[in-house]
Image (cartoon, rainbow, N blue to C red; front, side, top):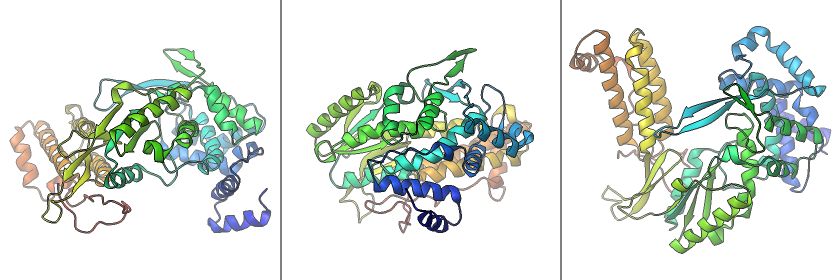
Length: 455
């Protein structure tokens, strides 16, 4: 057990944030003893400050209503303190029972497929967030460096930096693999065994089981399955990482190459084709042991060579290219820019914002929505060799805005183009010039890289 003195010093170290102090203590205890199983956690799930922190996270993330049709605005109208107090009482008295999640299907960008999404009620999202607050630091202490998805202080760009570094080291055979229906296919019993490796508090384990078995409501029918941690739940990414950690710890980098996993999407960087084929066979075997399987349409081995086809990973297209400046023409390196799917998604979103059905809206509001989307999209893709793609998307936004203006005033498109061209600042549409930061091998992607280059 952690002493009161240690708890007080930890609280002071994190600036008086009691929830962060709790997480810090749990993380340190788990890190210090990899064999420890935690037995006194349930009272922390319904702690007032933990439940309030969970509510703040749910409120900030927004989201639609669940099967009970209650929204975040409804909770605020009802009274947040009253709502959280009643929820904490249900947890304390062990009378809490989750509702089935509302099942919807959303389109996958760039494909005709639709992804199933489960939307728990606001009440259930708060409970899941509280469970995550308590359990995440315990399991985070065990997570390995090859895992990047849905983890504190880790991001897509951290994973992409490893890709770049490994290609410079000569690992240029890439195994691509995507786990088929990962969130829906994880077996509950095996997942619970993975959770029980670190948690022996039976009340917490029962709460996790109840969350998993709540089921989903689709077409008026409640479906409960023995597998799956439905995509859309607050705790689902953490539970998926806990389960897939079993794959990470069985991996042998020196034998099969460098694994880079972002939740259910993974690549392996290998030095030779023979090693890549062995890595693919090993991945298939490990996934089979977990009751999972790769999506065959997205599983292949790619050899990174100049003029080759490259591969897509985490929204970027990666390809080996030769330097285009006098100082770098003798070098080949792994460049990246937005994938076709990512570009198509951006074009679709811009088209939605400037659709004919929105002609009644003030132009300033439409420009504001375009700017918010462009800043977010460019903010993600700027860490790459993306200047050309960003310029094309910005030009497309200008064209769509000109068409929007022309339709609004019942004029020809050229009128809209001239109106934007002759208006200082292009009606306030954000410029993306000079925002690209090309990545550098063995260098933190957050650091400025000096002179920016355009692709």
